[in-house]
Image (cartoon, rainbow, N blue to C red; front, side, top):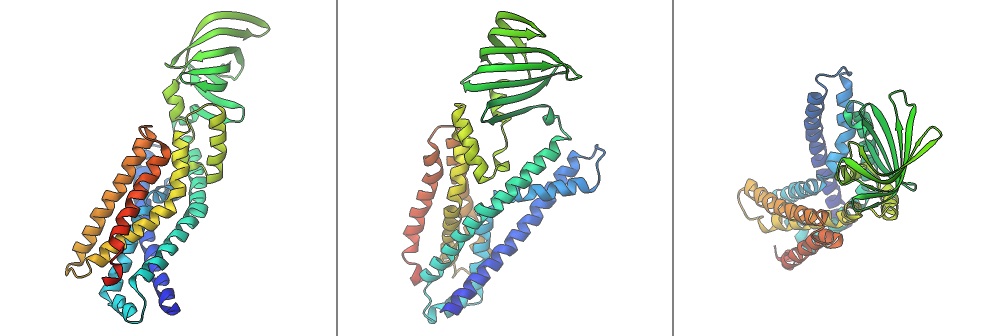
Length: 357
C-alpha cells in the first residue's frame, strides 16, 4: 500500500512539474514578445527584454496556478485510466477515496509551499522588474507610497518637482499636508503647508495655505495648485500588490489603516493568498471527479474538453466574486470564500459515489 501511495505522489508531482514547465515556457515567450515590442525603438541590450521577461514570468504564472493544477490533474488521471492502473490499485485494496484524500493533502501542502516560497520569490522579482522597467517609462516621474509617516507623493509638473506629504486621506481630501516645490535644478522654490487640501480634481484647492518663500510667510485662504494627480490617480499609483511579499502586505495594511485608506484591495490580496491552497485542492478534486466520471468515454479529447469547460466556468465564477469584492459590492471575506464554499458543496455531492467508479 505504501509503495502504491509513493507511486501516486511521484507521478502526480511529475505531471504537475511537466505542466508547470509548459506554462512557464509559453508565458515566457508571450511576455518576451511584449517586451521586444516595447523596446523596439529603445537603445537597450538585446538581452535586456529577455531578462525582464524572465523575472516577470513567475508573477504571471502565479495567477495561472489554478489552471496548472487543473490540467495536471487531468493529465495524471488520464494516464492512470489509460494504463488501467486505477483498476490495479482497486484490486490491491487501494480505494479511489484513498487516492483522492492522499493527493488532495499533497495538493494542499504544495499550495502552502507555493504561497510561502514561490509567491515571495515572484513578488521580489516583480518589484525588481517594475524598478527596471520604470527607468524606460514616464512612470519614474510619479510616485505615491504609504509609510509610517503618512502618504508621500512625488510629481513633476511644468518642469517643477513636487514632494508632497500628508498624514491622512479623508475621502477626497489630504489632511495635515506639506508641499515642497523645486525647480529643474532642485533648488527650493517654496513650501506650502495646509490642514486640508481638496484633491478631487488635478487642480487642487488648498484651504488656508501657509506659503513659505525663503524667510517670508504668506497665508492665502484658498490656493489653486495644479498637479498630475487627483484622488483616483493616487489610488492607482500605489505599489503593485503582486510586488509585495506576504509580510510586506501585512505591514502595508497597518499603514493603510493608519492613514484611513481603503483596505479592500489589500484585504482581497491577503485573503486570496490564504485561500489558494484550498482553491488548488478543490480544483484537483473537481477535475479528478470529472475524469473518473467520464472514464468510460471512448474519446480522450472529449473527457479533457468536459473537464476544461467545467473548470473554466468555476475559475470565472471565482473571478466574478473577486470583482464584486474589489468594487465593494460585497464584503471581502464573502468575495473570496463564497465560491470556495460553493465548490466544496459540489465536490461533496459528487464524491459520495467515488469508490463505485
